[in-house]
Length: 314
Image (cartoon, rainbow, N blue to C red; front, side, top):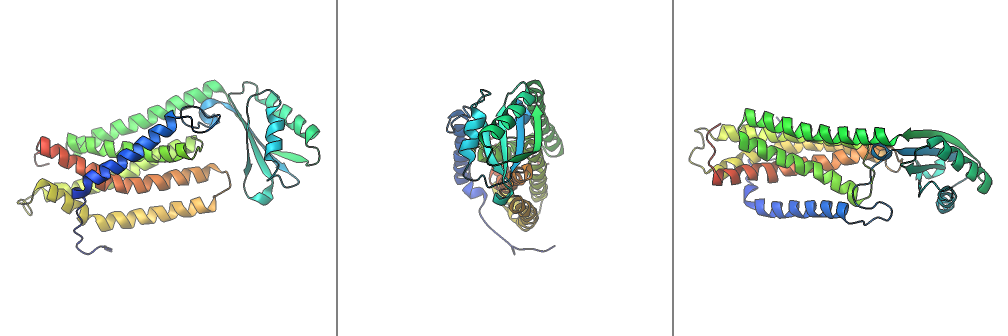
């Protein structure tokens, strides 16, 4: 196997307190961004897409540039009495496409017809054609939100049972804490940037969970090997630190490959407004967090557990 690091001996476990402080800061920023209404119109919580709240999206392609006309379009759509719409450009600047979104609208076609009629009347100098209309009812949206939450929670429970059965309970607990950390990182990123939480984003979270636990299990396997006779005189913390160093090349190589693929997709769809970009951005943040949490969260938690309740050979 190709090795980027020849006999590395970095003190990962010795720097666990610094890592814990850094992760705590990230979690506090994430929580603060969700409980403090930093964005007008969003209120408390995440910026949920119509997948979960219900609502209507209409995408229009205009004949002339609209980059400097979004305020006017927003005023026209907002004057219809359907609430405060979200108006933004989609795709490249030369595409002249605009997306108008209104959440929690019970009668979507009334909203769509009203917006089109108002634009034809008050913005007649820039004709348009309808590219897409998408609507999700509030009941369906709430059911999708509940299903998404259950899927994430169940995946974490299954993982803790699997890892706990394969190794021991402390390893399963450490793995799930690391997974929760990895899930919170992209959530915090999207919350701070006020990006929409969509169904593809939930799919990204589940993908991150699978990717992260796979990396964690590789290190846990090496820890189990190191608990044998070959380095029996070393302390448990040293054995864990050795395991992390022994798998460092594998971790960096596989993670770099995945990150390059995800980064290429993100660059390709950057500025397009497509959910593929959101999906790839969530994966990018989650993959980086997955490597970090395996080394600086999961492994040190096992060491801390062993310091309090010694772990028998697994």
